Image 1: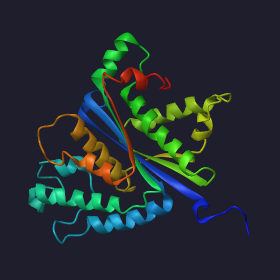
Image 2: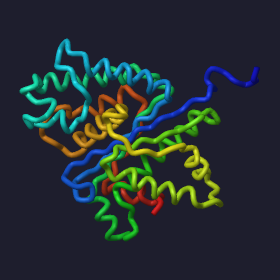
Image 3: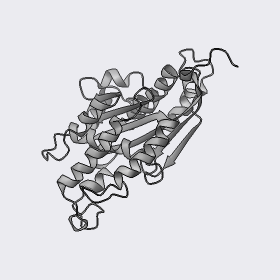
Length: 270
């Protein structure tokens, strides 16, 4: 029998899911961008996926949903899966989201966490007038969210991880930029702050669709809710979603504005 091994120290696989949202048309020409991350032990993710599927297909008080994508949920198009013609209205849409939020509240909070970073692009543009090497909003989000997920892995599960896998939504710019950031952070063999060791904990970085990796739908929910919260949208529909999620799950967040852009951009790798 191995000594020093307890229930807490069983080797675990960790999975992390990253999805973004924006206020505007383009990632590089908009009002605000946000990146959210949902990370948990593989055992938590496995049970979550089973329970999540059951929640989506529960049609007692609303139509069953094949998946949850916040942009589609809010769409007024008759072609949307959440259209009036398919039995949906704002009350039923809200009921679906509340059911998912309730499920999040049941997760093992010692082995799951949420992160979100939102950045005002005008703040980055104004800072760049003074400091031309100011990183992009995408890079700031990647430095704060996937990077700090990694630190959570190393801090909360020291020596316990068997594997750590990252999943990015396939149609967004974050994964490509993260690959560049990862190359920068792992190429310096003489780095002494411990960051290189943290980066080496990552086993794989993959692009995936939310229909294949359903936990991406949780990252989408938080990113979308954060944009709703931060852009002063006058429509009240699900305005408090991000705040509600943060109250029931361990979570960390950052909003970058003119007041703190210089501080948070100072240590972001270029």
